[in-house]
Image 1 (tube, rainbow, N blue to C red):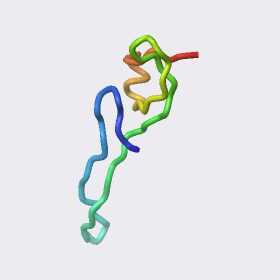
Image 2 (cartoon, helix red, strand yellow):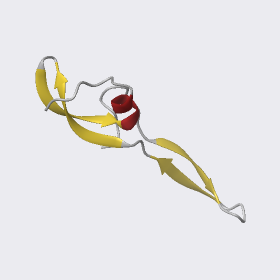
Image 3 (cartoon, rainbow, N blue to C red):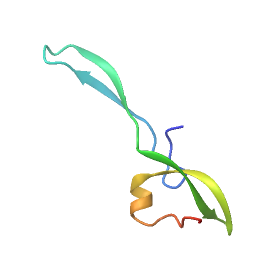
Length: 62
């Protein structure tokens, strides 16, 4: 589950290049945490990336 429920940030694909310039596929996964947040007035567990947590796009439930 590497997808943010707030901004929609997900897995990105690219190519890993070694020192000898051999190329192979790789993925970059976002830093996603499962947090308890207020969604539509009720606390729910959602998956949120650290950028959305840091920029206060999510109101966390206690």
